[in-house]
Length: 184
Image (cartoon, rainbow, N blue to C red; front, side):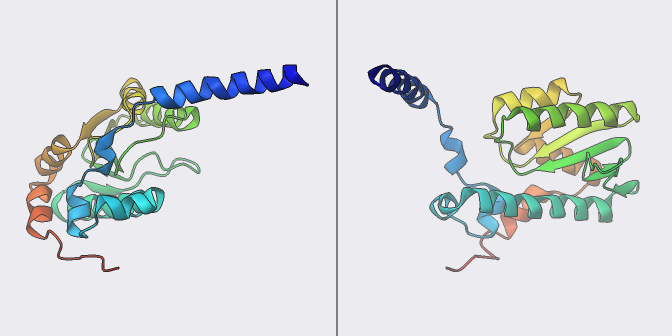
């Protein structure tokens, strides 16, 4: 009985050390322009981070798609390949996927990025991921890049959007800060 207790405690001790050594990126608690539009605080977002990140990601995608639909001559909606949708939109030769933030480093997610990038490249597209936030998991960014994706984050994302559309999304979002404040 003592042996099993020691073995289990050894496992728990190993994870305790791992947790203590884990470096959490405080940037995830920082504001971004989309949070500012809704006047969301880091504290409110922290109450249910998964919900807010998913919702903000949905609106980020809708904003980018709408800008490109209106301002880009060669706009196409999301590509469908079998039961897969490897990107959110196509502009010229760019197959563009939008992400609010990439925080998952699980192998299935990373494998998916690599496979999607390869599919798009094989179809003759330039795979591009436009990520709003800059506090992404480095392993996920690396997986995207090794999977043929051109990755843009933060200000570089806004510059890319302006380059292909002529629309300054960053300035627009700054101009409507707190206009759509979420009241709780």
